[in-house]
Amino acid sequence: MIKAGYASLYYQGGNKIGEKIKAQRQAKKLSVKDVADSMGVSPQAVYRWESGERMPDIVTFLSLVRLFGINVDQMLKD
Image (cartoon, rainbow, N blue to C red; front, side):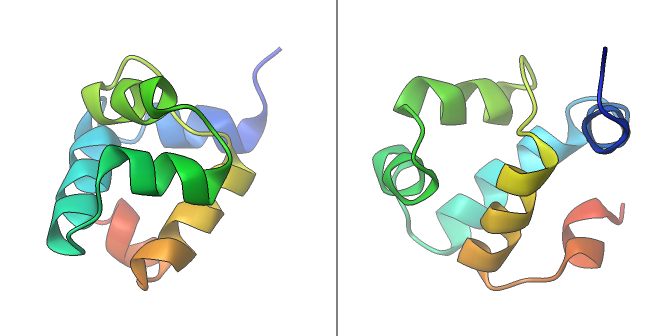
């Protein structure tokens, strides 16, 4: 069963969330390893998020938003 929060992230424009994660990471001059270490996940997980293969769960997504110093609306808007 897919959690509601996870589903809404996944269906928010396909890979747009992944592209935004990558853009925010690069704008903050963070490496994939930096993000992975901060989130407590593997670098492969971050690559999967950025490629759109997978999406972070809602708790991890909120942690990413805080790490990037932005709000949820900035990450979700087109």
